[in-house]
Image (cartoon, rainbow, N blue to C red; front, top):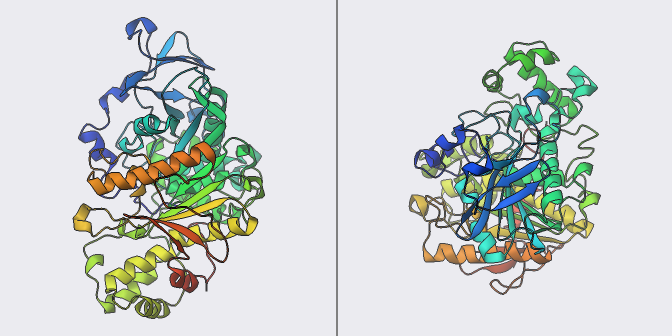
Length: 540
């Protein structure tokens, strides 16, 4: 899942506040009501009919765009519980601005518990086009983010691939994943997974409205980066999500295990103590403002690998999530869903990229790795192994490689292995191409694949830049995504033949300039970390 900072987008060096400050998002417009009478708007603008009323969008570079469409009710009256369907409206609701994001710390855009909104970009309406639907789930772990980031703009994908692109907001952090059933009773049985259940409802909305927006309800691809990928992995094991999507593409986001009910209850008790209410005093929690609840969530997590605030993630509650997403095997309900599992080669150069970490000495390394690699393995053995595998590596290069391998990449390996053992159609990639930012020091860091799959390298401050090589990489990665959405296979003429992942070969596409296939890349690192069990951060 995401290793990004909780106060940013997951895109290093670029917060949502910076994007809004510089005009990428029209923040002031989000403060006004999202709809007015039809007579007050351009009658030539695209108009769509939803189950709750009509919505009017706008055109952007020839595409029809609708923003801030509600797919569920205001969650404030249903805090910690699933929300019902959105209320209907009279007349035409303007879908011109993004809806509010869920409450989150250090928010840089309007937030509200009324946050169940989605955005649709499509080439055409009601034309029977049966276009693939691409449903993007944003990163930011389970704590922050929204579907409104400029890098998630779907116009280029729609133009290039004749597809429908949907982005979504849903409940996060304590509002989406605070598990209260053991403290407050069966009325809150779903509390540890309401953020996931919001996504289920959004996917149901897509199923019911795909044809209105020119899409195919029987061809929905979920794709997501970091926390978005982790949420997809979790959806693949949720009975309520079965049949709502037909392909899955994850980028640097894995969820091998969920939080057990004991650990989730302990975190709920810790949270209640920080909030100043008795454990299970839901009325006390319901009376608190979102800001006060978020302040209580700053309490330090009890996990030894946590150096930050309390950890929220999906919960093995036996109902909404009856099993771990990818342990001890891949979820049987998703065996027939084609899946792409991807990571970047230098993940931790995104969020551990301090000047100190770029200038480490060998004497600094043991303590640094022990604190940052998460898995419990003798540090001296790790350093010795890396020095043998890569004798030319500096201490900083060993640090970034070891922390990448011991954190999110290890989870990707676990998921790919059990999918291969299951015989499920799976393709694996590693992004090797490096970003030019920070004089190239960040290399292929966490989030770099976002502008490449969206073909949005020209977006201001894109971590890829917009040079010719970046555009070539975007052509390859967005082309593979579009081929996958259309056929369930990522192969197309712009890349070498991409073989399915099997054991023991471990076929992997290395996206680079040029791209190539490799069997078991970084096999030495994989074998090193396979000596210890993989435990998802925050699930114990």
